[in-house]
Amino acid sequence: MGSEERRGETSGEEDLERGGVSAELVGGNILKIRWVTGKTSAAKLFGKYGREGRPDFFRLLFGAIGGSLRSKFPENKANEIFRMIRNSQGFKDSLDNVFNSMKKWFFDEVVPKYKLKRGDVFAILTTLELNIDTGELKWDRENTQVIYWVRSDRIPEKCRELGVAGTGSEEIDKLKRENEELTRRINELTNENSRLITENEESRRKLEEIKRIVGLT
Image 1 (cartoon, rainbow, N blue to C red):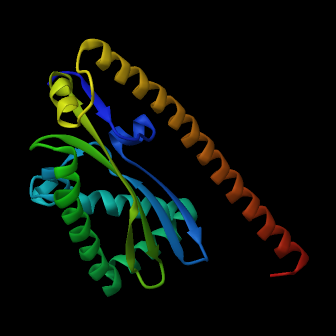
Image 2 (cartoon, rainbow, N blue to C red; image 1 turned 180 degrees about the vertical axis):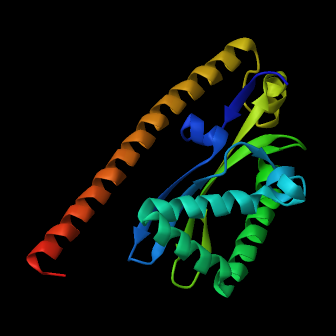
Image 3 (cartoon, one colour; image 1 turned 90 degrees about the horizontal axis):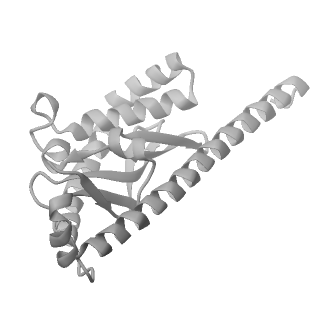
């Protein structure tokens, strides 16, 4: 396979390649998860060609949920919550619904829109909400993006399919430069967002400690 080019909005390079997750605890019981699947294919993510003949979707999602819980709770507590969630009927029912909804969205909307072919690779960036009391999982379809890779030998073809004017080397070089600049800028914003989340979490812990000391809690 030749070198690859991306089209679409991008996240951090490492997250796009390997997958990543960040989380925010809202209202004490809603875990808001920003999930990046990492580079994959439709057959692996949604079909029987994932690990052990099962869609990789479930393995990756469980890892994202476990990592999110551990980022917000001590490890023992996080593991206990995760076990309770996995065994709850609310989680089992909503997990099936999320999987089926995302699979239908991908094949009915994403594949025709971007003219993806068998074997093309992509990453999905999405937001999920998990109720840690009931186990109910919700998918935020509106905040979902797809980043896909195009082999270098298919760039002219893909440009024509998408109606991009000019498919010569100059136009391709221009697309590369624009993509590199966009990637650099979004990496900066991603790092800044992570820093602010960390600072906010530290401030919250300090506030809780002050309340405990002065007897407000």
